[in-house]
Amino acid sequence: MTTLLVTVPGGREGDAALELEWALGDARVRRAKWRGVLIVKTHLKKDEALERIKEFDTTAIFKVLPLEKLVRSKKEIIMEEAFEMAKERIKEAESFAVRCKRRGNWISSGKEIEIELGAKIKESLKARVDLTNPDWYVWIEVLGKKTGLSVIKPEEIVKKRVEF
Image (cartoon, rainbow, N blue to C red; front, side):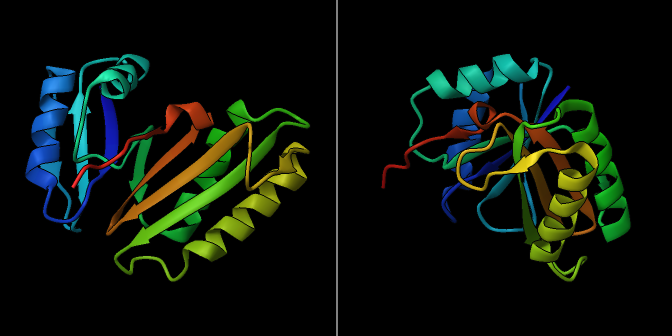
């Protein structure tokens, strides 16, 4: 089961949901509590789902991001789980960037998590911070009381053009 977080223009959630269902065939799309955010679950493997969306002609999708793990929105849990995931993938001397998008107020600061987690990964894994062109992204999406985590390559983030 692959979980994707999809951002869309506010008010275009319905259009985007249809596009995702057509592109993926087998998809369960639900609206998040926040405007312009959809959560998609599909039985397709992550790479196949991303490729289908990339190739599909869409008009209402900004960005598609795979979520590899969902955890409780508690700073200590987010930090620990994200670090464990980073440890499995990021090798010494590879570059990385931590991105944390906070929706809701379950944690006090996304920037704080980016800085603290980034420092821990840099120190412990001897990896380099590169905020513009990293080998890896440690991506954190706080969605109220649940937080999605991913450690992914930049090419695993699908960015589309929205037509108005």
